[in-house]
Image 1 (cartoon, rainbow, N blue to C red):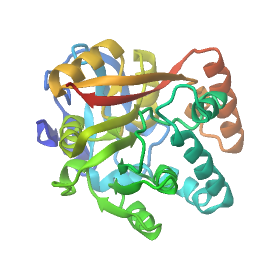
Image 2: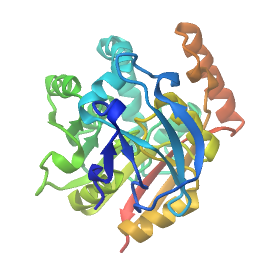
Image 3: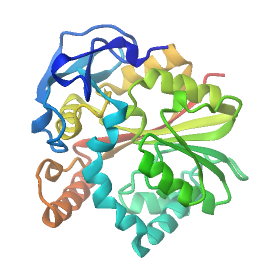
Image 4: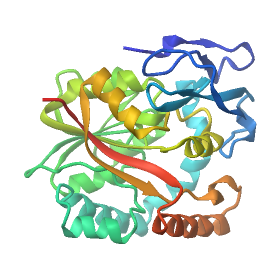
Length: 325
């Protein structure tokens, strides 16, 4: 198991950042920098945090790129403050209820390739970025890791599933508890779920942001039921996509997929997990890199639609993992 003990503090920015000296999966070091990055030049930079200069490094054996720095858990809320403030009003609106209903229909028959659920997902060009998994019949025991505002947790619950959530932002844990969920504060490997068992461990845009993805995967494996599945959605197949995401959110993203075949091989060899289903979603919008509001949001959706339609600019990878049997 690898842990954040693999990193050491940087004197200039010890409160918010630590340097990472090795790949978060295999612990090998790399001198191959795909790009150099300053935190204050990223799209999501919060000026009250110190600046730090880092790099995006490649681990070719694992098929990933990883940042030279790790964020402090105590500062994660600050990193995402702007996003949380922008979303909190929406998640209390009628539009959010409609979104949850739409998500429910996409999730209802997720196992079937030809169903109303798959039709809805495809017709919207996968705009809601729903992870892939085979939904077994009957209620599922679901663990939504990094549940955010609980969009998917609510959709699962409306299908009759038993849902628990985790989050590392205290305000979001309180919000989720207010929605009636059993919500755990902390990283998956530290929240004390030993003895629990889940049919589906759901990580939408979560695994790639965990400070110790290897420990997160190992913990998820131990929590799986005999026929359980891990459903994840992570960024961003290809070196150019990795650089795009790093310039948006360095150092929150802790790994980016740059070689899908090697990444699959690494998961198989290191964790005994195989990819059951996989979907590459296109549509990376350049408007994300511009600090604009309504116009930028409209531009973003337009770019994502056209790029996905043309199957260019890989954006995220949706995939499900099951143990080798």
